[in-house]
Image 1 (cartoon, rainbow, N blue to C red):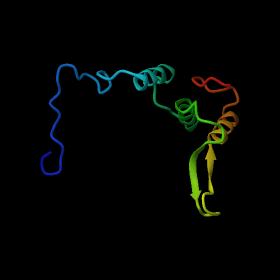
Image 2: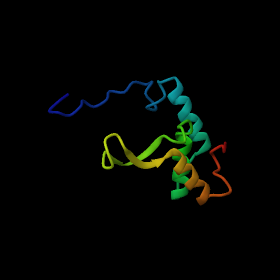
Image 3: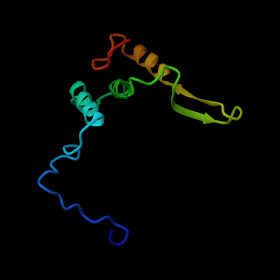
Length: 103
């Protein structure tokens, strides 16, 4: 580190892509995501679709977005659950999202 700044990367011939040298579940998950969604989302519906696809294993009652914490009493949190977001997507796109398998 020089003056609080990291030193420039002296890449080797192996560092073609930031994930190319890594192996494991994270890379496999990224590969599956890119196969299902080869392009960035173009609309708010597509963005929500991709978020839900990336977090497909989250429980229905898990809090996805916290609005308040402790406002209504100690330990009480409000916000949107994964179930709320899935229901919202179903209302916005009744035909079903292209890359997200419906339960």
